[in-house]
Image 1 (cartoon, rainbow, N blue to C red):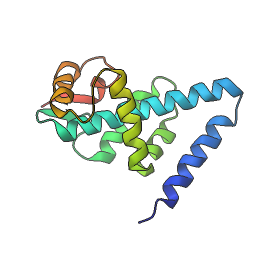
Image 2 (cartoon, one colour):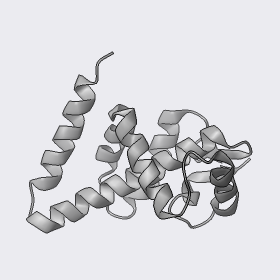
Image 3 (cartoon, rainbow, N blue to C red):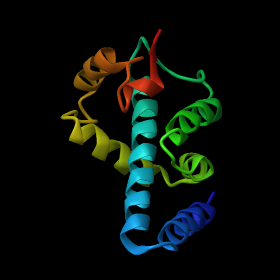
Image 4 (spheres, rainbow, N blue to C red):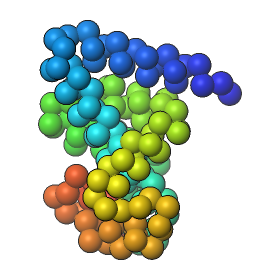
Length: 135
């Protein structure tokens, strides 16, 4: 399978996000990228850490629906988040997740530290923890 549709969707997201006024649209794109990173970080964590699950259940699409509904409460474009999370390039999604985890002092390659972090934040009012549950 090629990444053609994924590249197109990301390009459309960038065009749509920058179609408005300059810095406001840049802020919107950054907020969308950060939310996608937080959601994908939760997915990476739940895949790597026992005892940690995702809101919406184990099915990825149900998780994306539940997580994007929650993130959309901040005024972000729910449909665009879903498209990026479902059709986005895995490398780009991993980069966004790594950026939000690193900003929290968590190295994504250090599974034990990532899982300890998950135990602390899962199910709490936290930018990543709100998408996680303790099982």
